[in-house]
Structure formats: C-alpha cells, structure tokens
Length: 146
Image 1 (cartoon, rainbow, N blue to C red):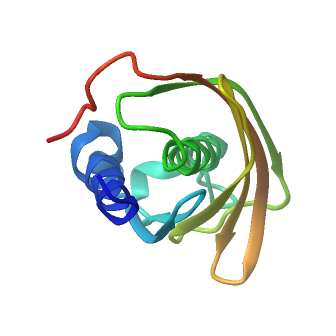
Image 2 (cartoon, rainbow, N blue to C red):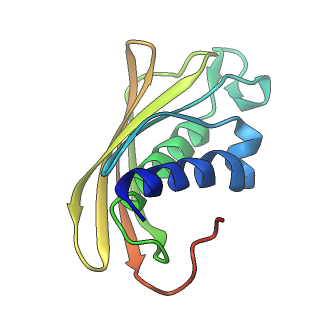
C-alpha cells in the first residue's frame, strides 16, 4: 500500500467507520503522514454551559484525542492498534457555539509509544492546546477497514 493509499484509508476509517466520529460529523480537511487537521461542526447538544454559552470541555478533549491519535496512526503500519495512555488539555478560553478545528502533529514516534501535539481553534481563535501519548501495538490485527 502506498503512503497516499494509506492516508485515504485512514481518512475513510476516521470519517465513516468510527460511529462516534460519524455521530459528531467529523471531517478531515488536511492529511499527511504525521499531521492532520479535522473539524466537527457545532450542534446544540455539544453545549456545556448554556448561561455563558460555551461548548462542553469534553468536546474539546475528544477532538484533541481523536486528532492526536489519527496523526500517530498515519505513521504506523496497517494492522497496528493504538490506545490513549495520557491526554493533557490546556483550555485557553471558552469555546463559542461554532465549529471546532484541531491540528495534530506527531512529535515523537517509537516502536511502542507515539506522542502528538494538538492545537484546537475556532476560526483564528486558539481555544486549547493538547498533548497526547499513545500505546502502539504493531501487527496485531488486520486493519479495521476495507
């Protein structure tokens, strides 16, 4: 499988075959080996503070984790599995009631551990930073996609 084919396989899997991502309407706008940008549209059920109003912090952390994991996943071989070991999110300001965009980049990749740095935005407004560590299990299964 070429790198481009692997990127398209990852895109299809992330956008169409993970039920939670499908539910949230997640879309990938940029994808290359070790780097990804993805977005989830605003939906009323994502509001965590109706008085302010602001999105729930869990939505931001979910997007950071998903983007970081996807970035690491682009760097491993088909048949590998990832699991989140640690996720740190620094919330810089409340997220408004609009779409969220995350860009993740792999900053360390070893045989068993991958680390990604994530930035979450709403337009030009920087709302959060994240860093995630993933356990990598290589060659343990067939890819979960066609």
